[in-house]
Image (tube, rainbow, N blue to C red; front, top):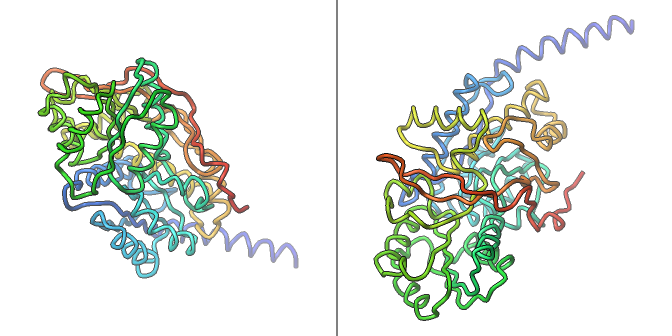
Length: 389
């Protein structure tokens, strides 16, 4: 009798595996695909699609259906789209989120529904700390890590006084706090500007000029960053007070900034020239397909595909095994464009941060790795994360 029962179980398992393999996985992807920062969302989507194509558009052997949703840069829209994906579309995974305020508005429905989520940009400090979740992982960073690396580099350059400028939302505040945490000199001024509608920064630049700092630090992603750099140069400050940045000069803004970006250092956990096979394939194929370099937004999103593939493989496509999926994700067992990849206990990567600078390469402008500022950096919020078992 026991042998018959075991045989029946084995036959059932054999029948289930092929059935699962035919059922498509549903992925909800939330980003910004409209307005002045649509280029960021499009770069993320292009990179996600490239990652799927590299895997034959299957994850763990199962075909994939992706539902893209535009958060319109608004927290209230982001949470509505998140709820739609969970409740109406019944997705298996949610991926994306550029903005910390949009992510924070959307976290509760994600966590309450135990929806397996890969955040590919937004680095709200709360996610790394008290709002960490067994089902939420990041393939990016915590907001204050990159500016902390900039602060360390400013120390190396002998900067004694600094003026900080950024947008008045969750990430902007985290960025300025990040610089302040590692910069050993005196901060002689801080300005938080309206977000995302303020595009004139002449008043803030005038205040910076009057403060006479050794350096200015600025954080402005997307279109506002192009405006800020342009006005910084037009004001004459570029030849007077050095500018240090985080997330302001990237592969999306560089083709428009061109010479204005030269000589302005920044920090990043990924640069297009990192020497590993996964990164080379990603950059080369992205350039072939899109006729431009990918940005760090895209690199983090491309990594999310490989991470998801490792998770689905680990459970043989059976997504009811939530605990096994979590354990598989925590191993970070995939080929990252960053090279070695490791998660901290709060599901935020432990990783290097590099000094990057813009250079002119023939007729193109590109970002290059200049040096490693900090190795295997772990965010400072992980101890506030009480991850349930």
